[in-house]
Length: 177
Ligand code: GDP
Image (tube, rainbow, N blue to C red):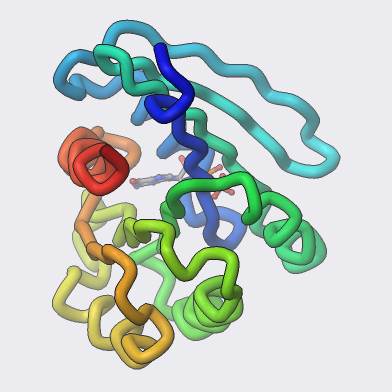
C-alpha cells in the first residue's frame, strides 16, 4: 500500500440522518474488491465513529461525525485531513430538510473542502413517503454556485437495506483514484 491509496472520508449530516447506519452498511457492502472492514466507536461523547474498508489496495478510512448542533462545530476540525465528503440526508424528514440544507451550506462554504469530491446521499429511500432524489436535488442545488468545480453526486440510498451503498462508494473511489 502506498500513501496515495489511503483516503479519509468524512461522513456528515444532521443527527438521525443515518450516518452510523450508513457506516455499518458501507462496511457490509459488496463493493468490488472489498476485502475487509474494521471499525471502532471512539467515543459517544463527541459522537465519533471510525471505520475502514479495504478494496484491493484502496483503503477508505471513514470518519462518522456527530450531527447534533453543538457537535457540528467540530466538523471543520477534521476537514484538513479529509479527501472526500459524504453528506447524509434523512429524506423522510421534511421538517428538518431546511436545517440540513443550512448545515450543508456551511460545510461547502469551507475553502478547505473546495477540491474534495462530495457524495450527497438521499437516505431512507425504503420509507414509502420519503422525498425522492427529484425532490431533494433541487433543494440542495440552490447551492450549486458554492459547489464549484468539485465532483458532486446526489444518490438515492437506504442505509437500512443497503440499496445504493456500493454504487456510492464506487463513485467515490473513482473520483479519488
Ligand atoms: P445518525 O445520528 O446520523 O448516526 O443516525 P443513525 O444511523 O443512528 O440512524 C438514526 C435512525 O434512523 C435509526 O433509528 C436508524 O435505524 C434509522 N435509519 C438509518 N438509515 C435508515 C434507512 O435507510 N431507512 C430507514 N427506514 N431508517 C434508517
